[in-house]
Image (cartoon, rainbow, N blue to C red; front, side, top):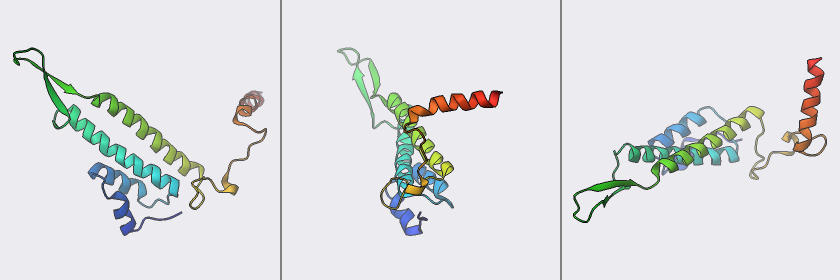
Length: 149
């Protein structure tokens, strides 16, 4: 686990806009993040910045990504085209939600990536009785039946 130093934080947040830097600051304040969590958080910060840009486009505040196309040959009527900004915004929001959930879950379970590998340390891996995750369903049902009695 590493704690961000001021120079490390500046290096990590270089290139981020205000929203991304704000998320980085909020998520790293007093937190110990593993290497994998730091990478996921940085990508989440980039997505937050993209969402801000897409929101600006959708509100019409930013015109760089908009174009006008004539509806007729005389050029008296035009339509404003926003190239898939709304659908892209939805996709980015879903991706952000998933990344933040992964970061939060890793913090709750205490599973920390091993130094430099991105994989959980050997002693922190959950024990799997019966081999696979598919074997969990019968055990869960059996345990629920036991507690119901």
